[in-house]
Length: 166
Image 1 (tube, rainbow, N blue to C red):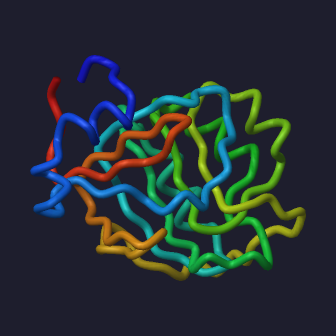
Image 2: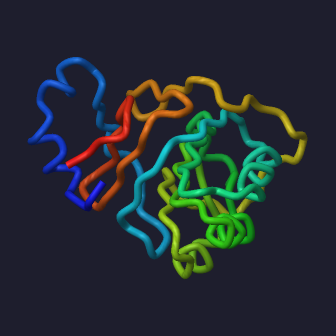
């Protein structure tokens, strides 16, 4: 899709909004990383205070995908840090959305990748490898399924059932 803002996408697609095919996440995420505008097909992950599966995904080739992590909105530790974000950038991920906390903010802000998270937290996550891959998740008031499309800019984050064309 040629770049248009999320606001323009909403204005141009009222029928998709009414049908639920196009949804906006509630504005609860902070913006991190150098890439403030990004989009791509979604890969979902559900974890709680554990980052083993997050790291495993980001070690794979991203191919322009966006990892959307439901961390249970925990504010007790970070489930994403600088090293995995550098790896994600180098592996071609477009972005990462974390319904939880991140750490190593300065390092992440130096990376050419889009990152959104609820907040930052200095404590690291557990390493038990618990979680679910590629399952439907509910974050920021929206149900998100693996394979849907995400569009993010400084106005917000949109989820679409299909890739949007202009």
